[in-house]
Length: 349
Ligand code: TXA
Ligand code: MG
Image (tube, rainbow, N blue to C red; front, side, top):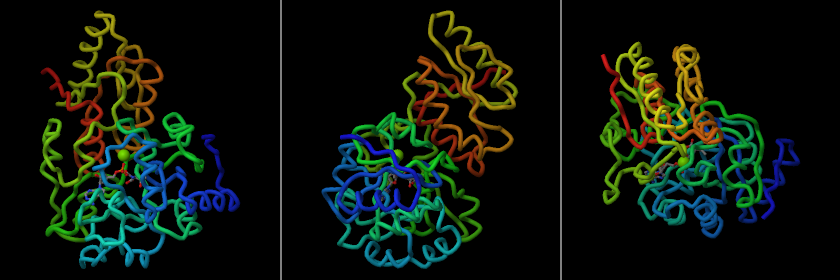
């Protein structure tokens, strides 16, 4: 298959929408990461997503909509808290888990009794949804297990030849995926931290719980049935073996440098994942900054691109700084821990 690379003119969006209506796959930008879209109500189209990504079929998809009235065809009912949250955070990086309508294909929900829905806050995504006129199922547009794509180039790296088209809308903004919030339970529960933080949610709804498995520092048990099935798979991982160094921020750099020195003496091509503030502190085969420690939004935006860059440089081992878990830091550390396969080292005193 020859993957079309489309711009964002009205004509290009109409072409992308026509492909989606015909049951083809189209990757498109959202405010978080690029999505791999298919007509959500066409089971054969949805099947193509799993094939193109190499995605396990028990991992359900998020359905994207442009208008709240599209919810009627997807959700059986709307808990009052869902209405409140949509009012404040939609369009935006908040996915709501809702009781599912029978008409939603099993392939989309992986047979669960719930469906994940979000309204993306990106003009190109919204224009495409508008033109297509149907809900679009879209996971992140990467091969399963790879870091999510924050540019059209990343999408092509992974999916060239496997999808009908990519709409190139430039770099995405938030850089990590949406917050997944289960509103079928009380209080609502964060299943995946993301662009809308726990603190922001609690200002609107009061108490929000966090899926306890998110704070466990290990791979979820593959035999278990996690609340958000996607969380049990290896994710976001660079090819190199990654380690996160935690502990007092002033001590992290010294520990990282001594680990890097040791690793390089063993002949291993070793990199450091750092920030603008500290990048001058290291000698390694690659020292890459993902953003500013003083502004964790920039770290979230830069993280996946930097993980891909380590791969391009052929880095075999990566030592990463760590970040406070408040605000978007919760999402950043969640993705870092997964990228590192839960390998964590405490900085020496
Ligand atoms: O920002 C985003 O959410 C991006 C953009 C493209 O919108 N999409 C995205 O999709 O990250 P994906 O497929 O990579 O992640 C979907 C997550 C998975 O962890 C999945 O298990 C969870 O949402 N999920 C989907 N439906 C669910 C459901 N009914 N119950 C619980 N978790 C669900
Ligand atoms: Mg994904």
